[in-house]
Structures are given as structure tokens and as C-alpha cells.
Image (cartoon, rainbow, N blue to C red):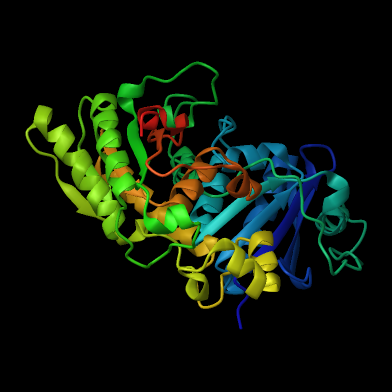
Length: 410
């Protein structure tokens, strides 16, 4: 059976920069650390950066051949990591075709997450690359004798998890192949501290639905269609007025199909309609809450008592699903798909997105390039509002998180 998630470790270098060059790449099982594939090749005379990109390409090709769905790409080249994440400009014309080739491979996977790691934690790929460099210089065969460890220590994350913005940022590399003048393509603009103009962004106003009986009773509430409580309906009225004040123009109100969200969305659309003459409400299945399986409707305490081991595993990894339910990795994948679709459908406009706690947390995690620990540290109130701006070049600005000022009197 093909591994769902693999780790690609890649490196490259040259003796002289430019000089005799080679690369190495290792593909590991993400859970066990077992080596699934190795790639190593001498590439003649080239620069360090060219060799590093060639190593990444070889590793991604190997992962694709293994049928992997997701890749954790780990390199000790900060330049390649930052360029593939879209934060650094690709200035050298010789790197653009390689970046474009790597971006094309990235698009073959459901998700690719790039991480920088220190050289000492990339020893296997480094040894393969050095053997290839020796061979290019006529010193030794292009093969390294490396005894790979079976357990991989998790790296320090620099480039955050994959997201709609990061996915679009990878298009920087693809467009770089056809760019004629460095810096003329706005999508290749380097990161900047200067605020971007909000009128060019697609603004997503993320609203969690109002309270239900399950919210108050601290129960897992996933796919069950639990209606708003009386307090929840009061929250929704206040939230609708707040959103109408925040958004001078709205292209659409998009909602999870569950009634606690559609009721919230319809109230918001009605509040906005007074000024705009009608705003459509569109249902989006990908915005539905996580499926909590056997835990649905149970209190948090009940689940802790009856499924202690399963809960510990679920809290420890976003790849683990509740019994009979859905993992956060799967929820994140469909939420990215939903956000991508909204950004394509409403470029430069404002869209109200009404959803649930898990999808909104995952969208904000991706936007802030945070790790999974963020999900357990962020609290989102019922009827809270968060605001996110995205730009076509991959830029992201989180402007508000969990605004609840409008609920103070409830």
C-alpha cells in the first residue's frame, strides 16, 4: 500500500560553486523513518543552488513514484525553502526553470510542507550529495555508504503548513520560468513589512455560528444538525449587525450546510441586504464541521472517560481521527479547497464565511503559518468574528481573530 505521508530530505552542492556538483535525496516513511527510496546523481559543473534544487526535484519525483499523497520536504538550504514558500524572490535566471519544475511536482500532491533543518539533521542526503560531488570530480563512485536511522526527529518548522495562500505562492516559482525581468512580476515581490492595500485583497470575514444546546453542555458537535439555542439566536442578531457594519460591500455569504450555520448566514445576509439590496447565501459542503464519529453528542468528560487512549492519540496528531470520524488533516484539505475556490470566484471582494470552530481554526492556522499546537491554544467563541485578507501573489494578513465585542450585552 502506498504511504499517505512521506518525508523527503534533499541536499546538493558543488566543489567550487560553480564546480563539480551533485545532489542526494532520501524518501522516508513519515511514521517509522524507514528509507523508501534514495536518489543521487553527479550533474557536472554547477552551482550549489542548482544542485540543491535538483535534489529537491529528485526527491519529489521519488515521492510521486511511491504514490504518496502528502510530503514533508526538509532541506538545509534556506534559499530553496524560502523560495518554494514564495517568501523570497527568485533572482537568478538559472534557478527559475528548476523552481518551475519543482512547483509542477508540488502540484501533484494533496499537500507539501517545506521545512528548513540544520545540516547535521540532513546527514543522509548530505552524504549522498557529497558522494555524487566526488564522482563529478573523478574521485569516487556516485554512491554513499550511509546507515540511515529508522526514526526521524521532527524538524523545527520554518515554512508553515500548506495553505491556500502558500499554494498560490508556489505559483511564483512556476511563473518565474517565463519572467523576463527580475522583479517585474508582482507575484515575485519579496516579503515586506509595509502594509498592503486592503482594496486589492480578497477579504474573508470568518464567522462561527451562534450557540446551540451542545455548545452550552460542552458536547462534541460535528455533523449532527443541532439548531441554534435562544441565546444563540440573540448572538446571531448581534453578529449580523456587526458584520453589516464591518463590510461596506459583500459579494456573497457562504455557509456550511448545517442549520446552525445557515441560520447565522441568513441573518447576516438580511442585515447586509438593507444597504445592498440583497446578498446571496451559498452553501458550501467543504465548510461543514469535523465528523466526530462515535464522539458525536458526547460530553468532553464522557469521551475522556470512555476513550482515553483514542483521545490522547487524537490530541497528539492531526492525522488521527475519532473512532468512525474524520481527521483534522482531512478537514484542513477540504477547507483549503473551499478557501481557494472563494478566492478564485471573488477576487478583490469581500465574502462572509459562516462555519464551525474546527474549520475556522484550521484556516487561521494556515494563514498564520502556525503548527498544529495552534489548534489547541486558540479559543473561538460562538458567534465570534475573524477577518483574513489574501492577495493573488500569496500574501496573507490576519486582521482580526475572535472579535466578540458585539456580544458583550448578551
